[in-house]
Image 1 (tube, one colour):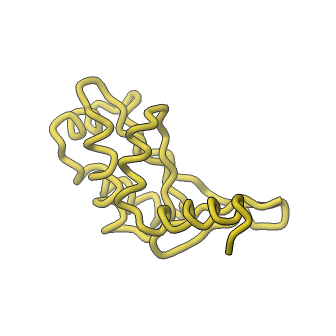
Image 2: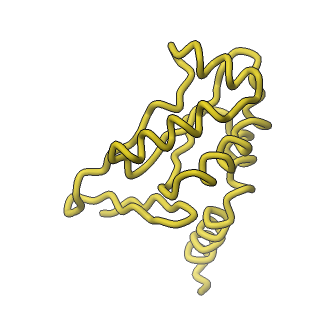
Image 3: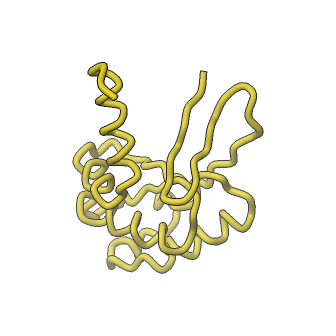
Length: 127
């Protein structure tokens, strides 16, 4: 069994036969006052610095969470995705329970939209 995580430039395959996958978890405002304040201000520079540092340290996937008090995830998550994808080329994982936020973020990721359409065709028995 395989799980594939697709990004704009890379695809990571997780399976019993694959090497260890490192998922960067630093883009999460829980317990991080500087990141929380930056997200509340709509400033994504801090998140982008965290993304770059994690990839330089070996992360092969980045977990992205923008859920903080007074932050509109539906608006900010897609902006964060675009900003982070501009500085790193690894796949992203959305760490949220906000389905509308996930859907909004997917709209700015054409590779995800294409994969979802492909999976839908496969389930429907189409090519």
